[in-house]
Length: 488
Image (cartoon, rainbow, N blue to C red; front, side, top):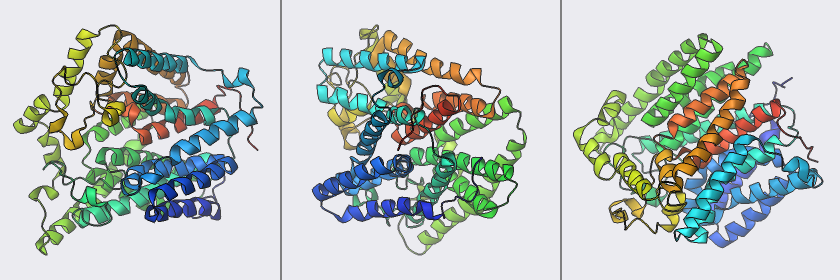
């Protein structure tokens, strides 16, 4: 039974809060000192408190863009925690290779996909460093799933996870409000303050993730965490923290709307509709509608009014700093935006992806060649051949903004088959348990994630895959997919 006394205000959260504060204070250190110091601190922390380190990881990954923009010395914290967790698991298993090497079908399909993309990329001239970078991008958060799904979870850990999400939601929301009301002048790295934003994007809140779509996805999970906590407290027949959770609920909805994230709104809507239909929990419709309305009335419109007031006081800001939601959705179909998508945007990427696919139909061109994380850092050996001019993009970098066209171009028919089996293998596990609330939720989240892949590189977005794989691990633990080891 879940304990209801544990909240983000409990003493047991004090080490987590201290470590988050320590992380922010480390921004002031020289990068080399910060790298060594944080490596030592978080290696020890992950070994002594492995499950709490995952809670920290959820906060760290969400704010990592902000941290590393100011101090690159903080960029390896997540990798260090992950490696230590795997070592801890191996030690706890007493090197039980039979248990550790047991995988589900979807995992084997995932490994085949990674192997195929890596081999083909290397054959086609991609550097080994770029290939390793791309593999790391795909697999790093799966490793958290691997660890968590094969351990005996401490009592009440899901509640602690949900409360960590609520705390993170408040951190990002308050920072986002400061960013919005200061017209992007306060609490931002200098490079972010003066980052050239299009007219359509200036009104959006970026906050510590440095991306409005990432922020919206995080807040979506924070809202889900609130629903989970309400369920826990309702089951325990207590009204503890009801007011605080309701305030959080409204705040997160309001900030969610201030991201103006069309894609995440579509994904969240799909998640809600599928879950409601599968569970026949129609009361959830009322709760979501009331939360959305309250978020608009109490947060969205007052904040935009505050921005107008700041502008009237003489602070310079573009006219586009305040945009109505309907106007934001309407911008998608404006002729100038359609032309831009065709010449340098999403439609252009899709056309180029299929052009590459036509030349490499069976195996694709390999990892590190088109629109993924590796091409951001290492470039691509084939961009010049296909007329992809990086000089017209901000910092000479582009994402495909579509996970599927990247997979089609980089791994061809074989890669599409492998990745499809990966996705369908997961769905089969959820569908077998669709009569349970957790199974229905996972099926709904799966479909929502698949939809997100049409407009985001969703399986390369670390904060999303971290949360997805943590929830998947909880599902695996509940259904005893693997042998579970007790960590001491």
